[in-house]
Image (tube, rainbow, N blue to C red):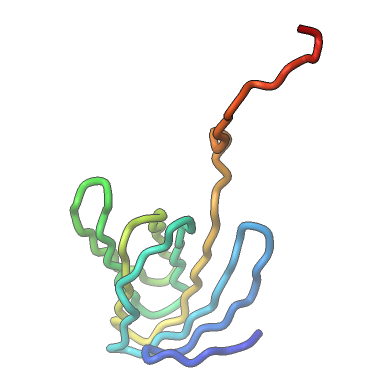
Length: 117
């Protein structure tokens, strides 16, 4: 597990495979991450200890939500929504990222042939 220092604390990727990635974060009270969004990834926050506030700007409705996470609380931010977190109390949390495959993700130029025409 390789730790990476951040202005708000530290993060460490503990798993990455196929379409899932898990990071353990240790946040220092008063710290916050940048406002950002992911093009394809869902971002779940799971709080193990402390308090983490998640702010999400919803792309579809133009509204903003704030969710306070305490021990064993979680929330999910879908792709395309700006979000950030604020560390309200020193915390340990996990970020779980995943992508979903879209079964309709195909753009056909033709429809093939049986070769019997």
